Image 1 (tube, rainbow, N blue to C red):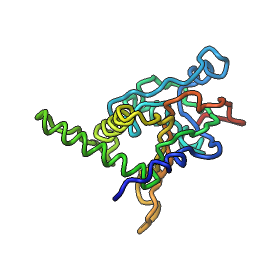
Image 2: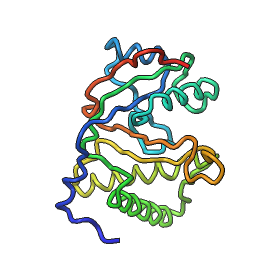
Image 3: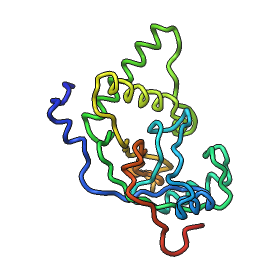
Image 4: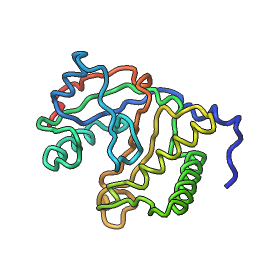
Length: 207
């Protein structure tokens, strides 16, 4: 597929604001709410789905809480220990967004993969592989996103401030369904200026 015209780069800036929700331990949430900690900590795991960044579930606080509760029982899901699962809300300006629901962004990812594959072959090292159930440990995708960011820097293109993607996850919602039980949209925020503020959720924010 041909590349989009350079003049169209302006459309990578997503209009409007979105609400994001981050599942974490209650102590982390309180540190952010009281100003002891200016921002949530970015994730830097080798298997992160969207590369480095502060991760949010878009418009889905319950999904964030489910994740934090799962991580309480399965410690490997989060580098930070979660003893009291809770949710932090955030108002996010997506800004200059690598939106992996758009053709141009997907093409950019594809080119990054081709570059990585060529470099790996030349170096005689195997490509990383996504592993686990439903490819939940995304070593390959993390590497491709990293190469994409690096290539933009080399080409002196404006860096992405956020990365956004939809994921089909979980079992079929019902017999014969084209929907999954844990479908979601996830956002990784690289530029904390895109986080306009954090907020507490009304009512109970713990399971």
